[in-house]
Image (cartoon, rainbow, N blue to C red; front, side):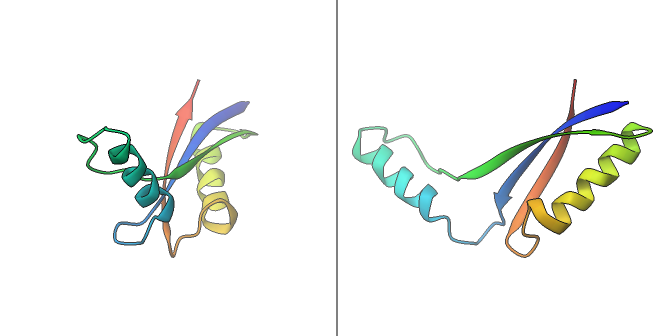
Length: 82
């Protein structure tokens, strides 16, 4: 069976996010004074064949650890999608 997931990747708290900082400043400069935080990340869609949802999720976790995310600098969340 084919299972689909969305992987959301973000920098770990406390690490610099130059894109977020620059965008935050730009939004304030444009008059959006209520913006208190901007953070950039990325989203990756993955579909794969597996015998079960648990087996598929285990494979996606391994993909994140080995390639999709940098575990030293980033966190990730995996969500199964319909």
